[in-house]
Every structure is written in structure tokens, then in C-alpha cells.
Amino acid sequence: MSHAPINLSRRQLFIHRKITDKPALPWIKEAQFTDLCTQCGACIKQCPTGIIRPSDGGFPRVDFEHGECTFCYQCAEACPEPLFLPKAEPAWHARAVIEASCLAKQNIDCRSCGDSCEPFAISFKLAVGAVAQPQINIAGCTGCGACVSVCPASAITIRNTLLGDANVTE
Ligand code: SF4
Ligand code: SF4
Ligand code: SF4
Image (cartoon, rainbow, N blue to C red; front, side):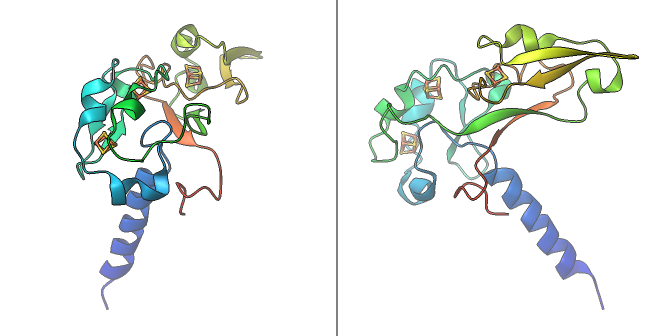
């Protein structure tokens, strides 16, 4: 008997997780997003930092490899559909996560992410016998993504942090 169905299922789960545990757009109503978004591209044209890009499925998504979110709310104002929460609501519950590929975790001195963080949410803790290790103050992190593109090891991702959130289905 082939193991193909199990592999396919695991692959689909991986893909779904990868898509859903990262924020799509700030202030977006995730549960209605794919039903109501017409893929008109207005938010993409309006974003001053150019971080909103079409995803593989055609829906817009922020891509922090191109820059940061300044929380200007222009994407929400440009959208003709009732898809965005009021600006007074939190933009998202996304925060930066430093993965194992971080250079400091491999004892190579690097502080690029800390230099890029305007809210000073990244600090470096001295360690015995190792280079200083980055630590993220979750309470201070806005999920702006400014630390993502500056990381030479692509070790930082922005992830939704609310378990049980509609965004996280695994
Ligand atoms: S809030 Fe502004 S910077 Fe952030 S994704 Fe929307 S348009 Fe772009
Ligand atoms: S402006 Fe609104 S409807 Fe148009 S692509 Fe962006 S989120 Fe979708
Ligand atoms: S996402 Fe923004 S606020 Fe959070 S650690 Fe990175 S640069 Fe700092």
C-alpha cells in the first residue's frame, strides 16, 4: 500500500499552516477576507511602503521582505469592501519571532534587527561564552516587520500570536 495519501495530507497541512499563521493585512477581518475580497488591487496600489503584494492565490498579503508596515491605514481606506476593522482597533496580533537560523544563535555576532527596531523591542542579552543573544519584548513589538528584511539570515518572521484565533487553524 502506498504512503502517498499520508504525505499529501501532511503537505496540505503544512501549506495551510504556512498561509494562515502569518497576517494577511493590517485590520483585516480574516474570517471574511477570501469571501469578500474581489482582488481589485486598490490596497496594493495605495500602500506607501509597497509591502502589499498579490499572493499565489491572487489575494493581497503583506510581504515584509519589501519593507515595513507604518500602520498608516491607507490600505483600509482604499478598500471598497467592508473588510477592514476601524482604525481604533489593534491592526493585528502579529509579533516578530526569531528562528533558529539567527546568526547570533550560531555564535556569530549580529545586531542588524535591533538597529532597525524603532520601538526598541529587541534587546541583546550578554551570554557567557557566546555572542549577545537577541530577545524580543513581545509587549513592545508592534509586528511592523521592519526587522525582517534587514536580517542577513532571513531568521525573523511575523506571526499571529493569538492561539485560537481564526487565523491559526492547526
Ligand atoms: S497600513 Fe499602510 S503601510 Fe501598512 S499595509 Fe496598509 S497601506 Fe501599507
Ligand atoms: S482593496 Fe479590498 S477588495 Fe481590493 S484587493 Fe485590497 S482587500 Fe481586496
Ligand atoms: S516587528 Fe517591528 S516592533 Fe517588532 S521587533 Fe521587529 S522591528 Fe521591532
